[in-house]
Image 1 (tube, helix red, strand yellow):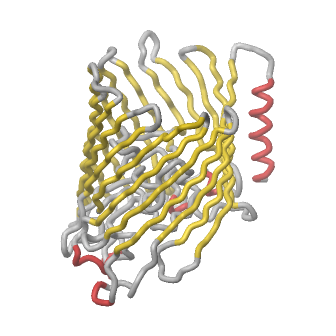
Image 2 (cartoon, helix red, strand yellow):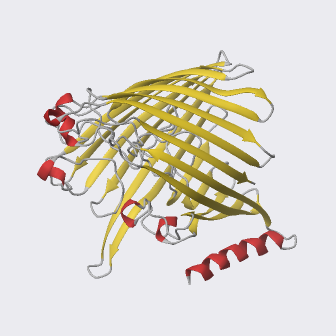
Image 3 (tube, helix red, strand yellow):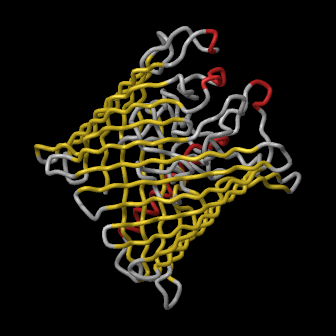
Length: 451
């Protein structure tokens, strides 16, 4: 049945694309990615693992007029030789079902319509779509991000050439019981703005999430230690943030951002609150773009629950490094995250020195980066988790990243990347840690066809 559904969806898209001209204009797009990963984590004398992935997205835009269109996209992902995706399960499915992880090979990734409010430039987008706040200076956002589309309604309203407002509501999770006629949900509400001046842009935003404990949503937080690992019930999360960009002196560009979050639990004497700040300066040259970035994310105090002093988030992401933080040009939602799946950079601080888009030959470019990272959680909390999952002020590492991109054809690219992480984690029984750890590394290669 699932194979027939997949074939039916694909056949429908093909027939739509080949249909004769009519009032509806159809434009196809797609992505075929083949990726190989070989990684070694920090476990002393632990084994390395390799994975071969295939990732496919096929979409179609159905345009009736400038004021009305629809978009439909299916996707599939799998390890070669394995018909199902072992990474995605119901417990981490951000949209509460019917995602690629729920079916062996294919499912609906996005399905929405765009329409303009009559007589205005206000655009409304309804359906499953990619929804995210403003990206922070170093890329993506540690509060929540659009790696996994969500069901919702988004509104974008340009006021004039200088000001614009956008808002959305998204249902990130729903767990329904047809026996008790009850549903646990996770709803997120977002309001953002943009102010553009000559050589300067400011993008403030606020968000609120109402999260039921049983809504099956992956939230980076509020685990305690020992017997306090259990959940604390339903909660409300509040965020406020802003990103500023200065490009008045282009090709010199400076960015800075700040995010604050607070999570309160209903009916429990518990809370989670934290913040994240970063900045980056870059200078574009004909042969590459050097940049210097820094960030600081709040951590737990001595005696806090685990993550109590960290920024609360719903599948937050960052782009600080290719290995430990799982950033870079590779598909972050199909990698095994051997180095800890530390997506949001909460509880850490660091600096990143990089040179991107180094190019001396046509269609061939390189990027190199050195990243220093140290924990901000109290040094007394080393027993809370493994150091790559929970870094204290006694834990640090230096990561070296290198990537090469070759554009084979207009729509076909090859990427090769290496990450090597030199660890300096606290060890020994007195810190509830192993006696020693190994350095971590990862090698990835990707062929990607996009149209």
